[in-house]
Image: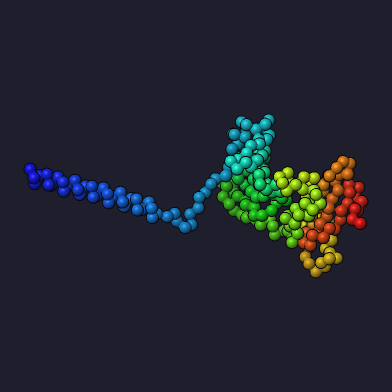
Length: 234
């Protein structure tokens, strides 16, 4: 009997040791395992067409907020595609923009300063795979969006507290390829033309649609005219 009991205890001990070793082995593998260095977490960004059709106002627009409090404005139609404009809670001058195919596949995404593309824009194929990136900031000279905000702030035309562009009705960045801009500037005759800012504002009626024209490289105020084209620079 003693021999049998001893054998049973030995067998039980071997089983327990095997189980403990097995658990330790699995645990150590989990603790020490690492994702391959080149692996990335892929989050597929799609447009929920059925949700838009169900909840949008007259099938035209749907406005809601994300978890961070940013306002998401969805528009579009199945025959042309869909769009998202993201109004960031803490960035009054910058908006996110996303364009989707009629099937809801992401086609391009980036950020806007007014209606002007800024930063890196991503472009995707019909399957939603990234195929191209464009640095939109390369088109700006030294007087870029940040300098424009400071200029308008000094003029009392923008609200940095949260309402964004305030009195601004239109803001454009025109390069020499698409606008009638003089090839040579008096203040920098040897510098390649980086374009100009055209900024319109309406501070009070009837004095609306006043426009600033600002050199995109130096920040030089080229023109400040009223709605009738009268020059206001003295």
